Length: 143
Length: 346
Image (cartoon, rainbow over all chains, first blue to last red):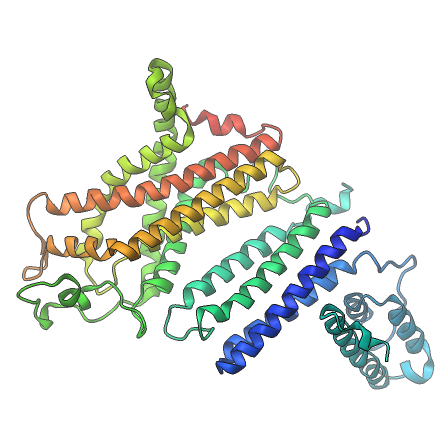
């Protein structure tokens, strides 16, 4: 697959903004109207859009020359999927390095705890940054 | 394409058509008992997001090579199978839309015998004991709808090619009839004539079953046909997206726009002039409520002819657009199927 051209990237960003504004508007509307089903469905559709959009866009930015190592108790393909969705190859490589560390990757429990502690803040941070950026509030990202 | 990609299935058409089907189904569910969205305006954000997902899928699917799958060189729905299979699927879609749009619900005034006195202004009113108050389970209607759809699809699949061949020969002999050799007017005329013939036989049968089901509105028929044909079109176009050229996309856009406009027009006229209610009252007038039989005479047949030709015209006007698109896709694919489609008269 070839890399995404800037025009397409720009189009997708505009689409992101539209989806975000519609999602926020829809959620506010359904809260006012007290329609839980509508609220949940709008939120689910917006999350699905985010997942589809990120997954597809980041397919190009995630390539490995060598085969992945096997680690006991860790599903690396699932971890790669999450990192691919986040569009962060460095995070994947960093986590892989951590898991090779005998202190962290010794047992299934310690490995899972380490992954949880690293991935949840990364997901939250990514989502927050994207929301601020798409709402033209990226100046707040500096602080 | 390398050999590892051979035999890999292309799920994009399934995702796209499923997404479109689910979205449109939500639109119809809105009018039912428990609307998912509090008001029609409340569903606009959801629609926008779903279409954004579809747009993202399309944008990226256009850039990636489609894996070779087992569809082969021909179109997904083969010409010789398209009649019965397309008919059965259309029957199912028809029932689904009928259930979502016409079925009794507290916030809907359905067209049925339960409302006949107020709707048709019958004097003296039909007594309560002669009115069927129960409604059949929609699931029990599935076999009937699929079988009738399959039978009608088979009739259309067998007869339309011969009809179109006859029209082509007629146009060669009489230049004045040249306009009818085009698939669209030919299909429309076929729909009106065969719709009338089928309607005169089928409408009284369906009406005389009289098991409490509501009457299918004309707008429901138009929506069902448009959605059914639209889904097949979308499916085939999505499957063959890499072979579609500019003119094929233009034809697709034109056919879909005409379909939307026609459906919208039928919907508007039906709502504005109460065509479905009038048709129902006309049918009901042909029905002897005391003996539970159709009245003798031409009235039931005339009602069947009018209703059948109307629905037949709607069906074939959309189906002709489908045929035109198939031809366009086949030509874009290298003409492999065009001979198949044009051999309709053989």
